[in-house]
Length: 262
Image (cartoon, rainbow, N blue to C red; front, side, top):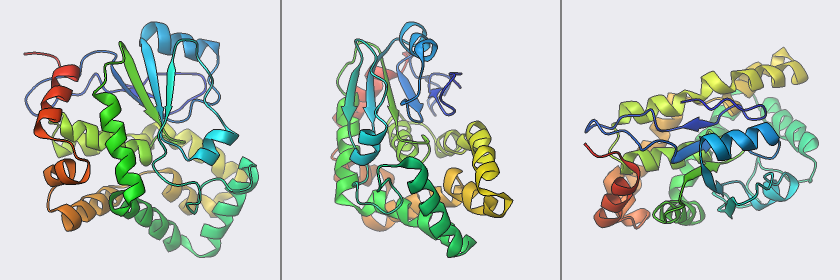
């Protein structure tokens, strides 16, 4: 369910989703989003009063957080849990977002349209293979096993890749089928399209393919993720247990916390 805020595009509650056993996520507990560095007083009121927000997990790199920190909301805990290291190619370098953005897009564009797909594919392979990322997703699940007394929101910059994979992991642990998980992931394209058009207007129509690849999501990225998990662990269940150290008992606790009873 899309949460319409003035200064985010991709904020969504997971409460409207139903798992393969017919159980829904409890109302106002789990929210995925893009960055919260520009939210205003109205946005804060909606999140705290209507959605009972209590905890934010920021999945961005330390440099991103330093340059564009989340707006501080009274009574809300912010936990920093970067999925990628700050020296990762494609994240902020100079401390000036506009310059970093132009440099990054120009580099991808110069190397040709296929390079944007290769870049995104590498990111998705990395979040499975990297110990840094694996430990961050371990921490993400551990945080969710602690009762916040209200809603938990997690986000990266666009709310699609790092936060998108976090959501896939969570939904899988909550016994959602792959069709629902992939549909939720791909729905970013609907909510983020306005931002893509804005970037095209700034950069020029010749950059559209690159911008849509970098700022959109594709089924082939999901396939890369699942192939990487299968190659390294054999199955998603094994990835949860062996990679993320998330036991069957942890899974049962998570489901009891966040799923409605029959």
